[in-house]
Amino acid sequence: MEGHRFWQYMAAGSVAGMAEHMAMFPVDTLKTRMQTVAASASSSSQHHHPTVGRLLASIVRSEGPSGLYRGIAAIGLGAGPAHAAYFAVYELCKDRLGGNRQDGRHHPLIHAASGVAATIASDALLTPMDVVKQRLQLRWSPYSGVRDCVVRMLRDEGIRAFYASYRTTVLMNAPFTAVHFATYEAVKKILTEIAPENASEERLLVHLTAGGAAGALASAVTTPLDVVKTRLQCQGVCGADTFNGSSIRMVMEKIVAKEGPRALLQGLKPRVLFHAPAAAICWSTYEAMKSFLQRNTHQISSSP
Image 1: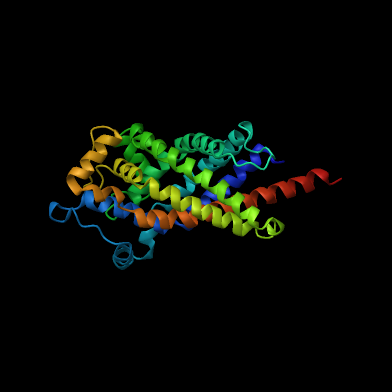
Image 2: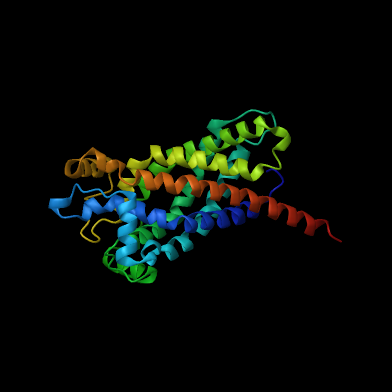
């Protein structure tokens, strides 16, 4: 597996995941607010959709800069183990399926399939904390913190509330990661081939560019499913709609009937603004950590 050990993928992925989510957390808060504001608005204003700039100014003005960071502890707790599993499963599947063969060929289906397997594993770990994070991000959140949210959800709604959106999350992240990983590997290969003599010196730029392109494209095409996921995770909180089940079609139909088709694209701009730099940060951090761990492990093992 390219000279790496399984634990190295997990450690590198854990650091990369926490760096990605915590660096871009304010943008994620804007996305969550945009996707839920219409659901919790009064009937007279249910079609009001604030712009990114207006929403940012409103949060800072009424809640202070700290309002952009409510729930960051939850994602900090969940991102580490989830991304450790994410990258480890991806690298393991890619290797087993032959994606690391040195034949100079690109294997988009292998990268896509490996990405789907990775997201199924990581979403099982991240979804509960993502639910807590999004509920804390709401403007009038009734929870004082991560512990209060977890305790009250368990008491009032049961363990199933933490996984109400799991099926939607997987169905959203399956095409997301398929597009993401296939695009990342393709762009990385193209950029490396453009200037192979400078590939090692420009490796960071390659990962940043490929990661940013992959994150932007994948996030844009899966925004409607992300809206459904957010509504399911925040249902019943701060006056948001509740749903009689977790059917994606049912939730979409209810959103469209109440707010119009445009509501399924709410949060598109902040979602792309989140995932493009987030993916660039994540991939560059991940690749840098892999190289660091491999280099230091090799030095330790070869020392007398």
